[in-house]
Image (cartoon, rainbow, N blue to C red; front, side, top):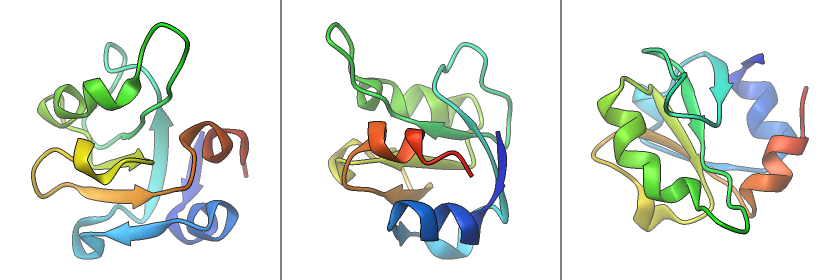
Length: 94
């Protein structure tokens, strides 16, 4: 999925943290194993995992931005779209 940042912000009602470093377009991934430098990592939470636990790994692998519903999971000065629920944000495919 490759979406303009402005459209993603409107669709999700997110708050942007570190806006100056946010990418203009988002290529969203939920798996750090397939993340490419410049991607946006969306931290999904499931029954047996919490993507927020992988936020630092996403940044180490080159994520340009994180989509989180818990700001304390933020890794360094990376841009963050803070949403109410990451699963709902993921469902807002523009």
